[in-house]
Image (cartoon, rainbow, N blue to C red):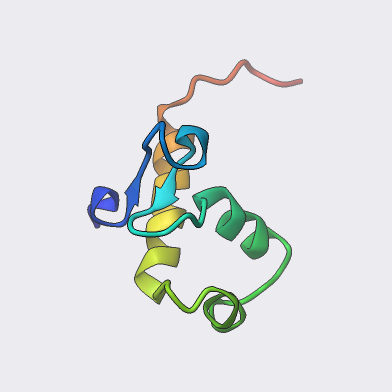
Length: 75
């Protein structure tokens, strides 16, 4: 999946936070809803401008960010 097909960051929109293209829905909001236990159906009902592909793109984006970060060992 190419997340750039779904997600962009523009300094003029939502202070440059990653959002779904053509919306002002921030990726972080969808990730927080998933963390809270909402399923795809509930999220799409709340954000009808999104599709299941947007949710997959958010997860893919999060995985890419984590994969690119360097973490200090924890004990």
